[in-house]
Amino acid sequence: MKRIFILLATLGLCAAPALRAQDAATQERLDKLAGRIEDLTAAQDALRKQMNGLSKELESVREQSGKPNTSYARQEDLKGLAESIKEVDRKRIDDAEKIHSELLKLRKALEVPLAPPKPKTSSVPKDKPASDKPARDEKVFPYVIQSGDTLSAIVQAYKEKNIKVTAAQILNANPGLKAERLIVGTKIFIPAPQP
Image 1 (cartoon, rainbow, N blue to C red):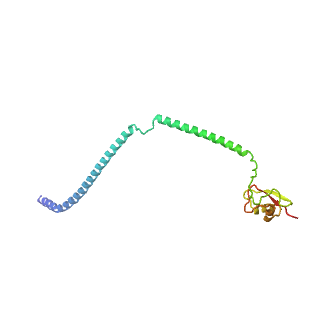
Image 2 (cartoon, rainbow, N blue to C red):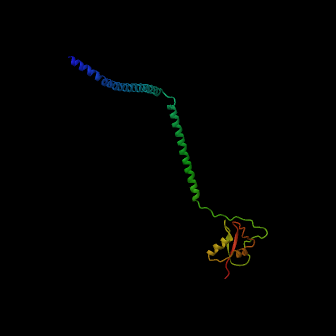
């Protein structure tokens, strides 16, 4: 028994450093776990506070949604708006009918053929009055000057009709006529070509 006791004491002495090393490692693990538990507890507390804040905010939203808001339209306001819209629509229809009737009047007015324009009497310079008769007794074609006419345009128009005439011949046949100043509505004579 003495031997067993000695053996146990020897084992106890030898095992003490190994047990101490295991105790230190275990203690380190326990410290780490304790730190993690504290972190989890702090995070849980923060989440609880956040949830409490959110629940209070939710309650306040519920209270506000339950209270009547004065910014909503009342039934009388909606009826007034409907009447105003009906009035605007009625006026729009009346305007459309007026426009339609005016367009029909305009159409009728445009369908009537226009009367040919009357030649305007024009004043001829007093120094050389133009006459209604050609300068000499010769065959002539009467022509009334139109807006935008020039002597060269008149000569070209008669050339297209196979009547060869020059600007000088037109000026000779119409005393007092000036090429740079043709008056719209004035009657001139275009001389016929001589055979």
